[in-house]
Length: 279
Length: 316
Image (cartoon, rainbow over all chains, first blue to last red; front, top):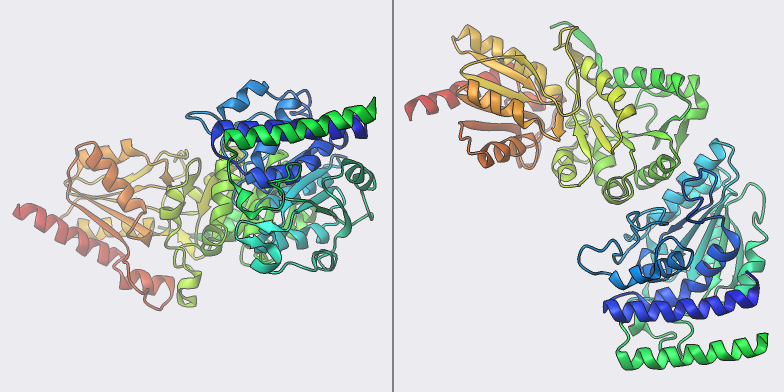
């Protein structure tokens, strides 16, 4: 999929995310919209993961440590054909497997997550297994910036560097906001670049809402042989909808019918403009 | 009973055997290879031991990731840290995610004795029993330890095994069969049956001898699997003896005793019962043997508990 097709895809995904959250009357709107471009590029251009190869030991792996942004993941997996998009309507419903955090009961989900600070250690284990078995797969994991105060992420980072896991790609969805407020006001994280470099990563920054920038950054992996890769993906929480962007209240606010209509109208306008440019 | 070696050493030797035969067997340690008697393993099979440093959460998370790729992972750490510090990783990354990791809690219970409560695991049965999709074992002697580790190798589900570090007497005969979830009846008694687990089992067996000398018929069951509990063996003991005493190196809350009490009562079986374990108090300072003696987990202490229970029962 080329860059323009990916941009259109991101808009489609945003529409689906907002629609299913509205339908379920629950979900993590802001975080799903901030990370969906990253998932889009990974699943549609970078990773070799599909319903056909999901049992193949050589497939790439994706672990979503920020499990709460599950609506983005479920949307992308439906589009990849892991299940029918109609199943997204069961989100959070009685006896549905489509619950509020990723579970392996949903086809295509690699690891159950939801409690923060867990994904990176599991991804390290997967990457280590790849090295031990001489397999060439890569392991991608997406972390929220807010979850970086969990100490376990730093335990895992030390191990990743120690075992020279250059087959591990850690992506930070750096949207700068967490449920209480800006990350730098809650407990300051910066300088993340310095911290991750000190922990042994090869670090790159990019615009995590720009599919072109994401593509070019991910194409450079491994950034340095023998070092785990880390991408600081600078994003906007709630990206793509003017009245949701950068609003703390939208961490897990659900759009009303009226808000959904306004959001979809904005996204459709963006879609039309993009199609015009492409034509 | 002839004295064997520490279950810890039996574990390490069994693991080395398994790992020699299967390259997919991996041992993960959190700076715990020395305390886990795994230095010979590290010398023999350096590519099959992975060190993560003093980081138990990371230990369990990495183990889950390795297991997802088909590795047979034994995550080894002192039981106190493994099951408390990494509890959420056990619950989510292993049990909930259904990764068949083998969690090995070494120097369990009060094995660390005078090192104090930070190093005791008197909570692990209680905490882990409430986690879905995790089997819990506490082998008594070298035989049970060897068989539990071999069973863990083949086990399709997450499993937790805990044991201590003192030399243990052999409580089993060579023809004994071991199966996860199936208790082993060591001796039958018509007056009282001890339902014991882990390193308390030999003391219960010796208590049977003490009671026999006093004209009381006592039996012992080794309930090596705490979950799933062998309710059938429990019911047979309740049918064949007048009273039951559970014995465990664990808090009296939430462990083997309460599991047995709940199982019996919910089946409408009402028997005189005592739960012997570590009471809910600031644990006394001492070696494992001294702590056991302080709380009556000795042949004489258990015999007295049995006699008192039977006396109460005969008055009724």
